[in-house]
Length: 79
Image 1: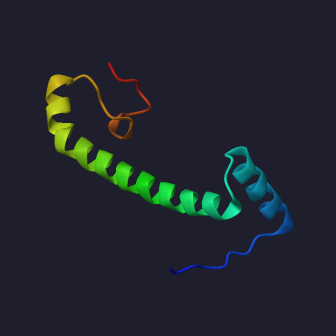
Image 2: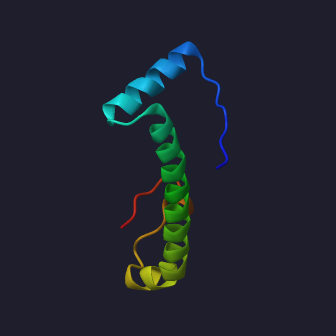
């Protein structure tokens, strides 16, 4: 199975060890899970953004008074 070496400062390693201990995991398992969790998070965010883009027209039709912050003029609040 592939593996890698990761370098940390003494302070960083101490903090990572403490975080692993707080979750009741070995350092190896904690770092593995952290990478996998980040990969899943990115996949989820990409899927959510895609879903929102598909429904944007429906939302705009249903709530015509709601103007996205990026399209407001002079920081005006939505209706």
